[in-house]
Amino acid sequence: MDRNIPIFIVGYMGAGKSTLGRKLAQLLQRDFIDTDIFIENRFRKSVSDIFAQEGEAIFRSREKCVIEELSSFPNAVIATGGGLPCFYENMELMKSSGITIYLKLSAPVLAERIELCKRTRPTVRHLSGEDLLQHICKALEERSSYYEKASFIISCDAVKTDKDETHLAEDIASRLLTL
Image 1 (cartoon, rainbow, N blue to C red):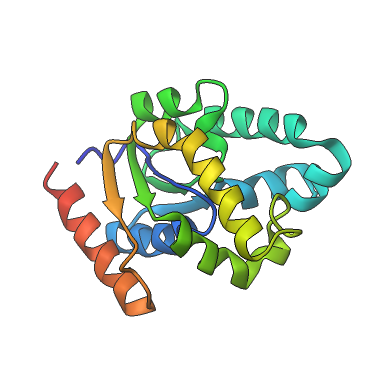
Image 2: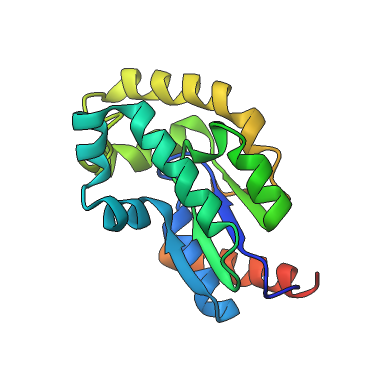
């Protein structure tokens, strides 16, 4: 595997992109970058505040600028925001500049995960139960065609524990090292 190209982790919110990305970066001895944290540091505002004060369109344009910059970062594992691959030509840019990995989960599993941390998720904090599940189903219907363009699609419904995440990261790392 070429160490000069980045590895991008994509998927819906709550899929475990940041958690898996950190583990994968450690195993591959690469830097880890979370695009949401990168945006927060760059613009000195939380993602929630950007959404609330400036709107989604501004946030998405900032994501676009950030992914254009990060696509040239060598030796990095980059966890993207859930919507990032679905706007502009972001997914095509990531595919042409690196390796893309989609962490695929079913809507019910995502709903369970998101319910536990939704107060930090600006687009779903007001939803619960069936409304949250329906929101996720609709979003996955809109986004899956982007996510599924990834170089690798990893089914993650069975990943429940930290140990499961570690095993998954080890499996992905071993696959990548054979490229």
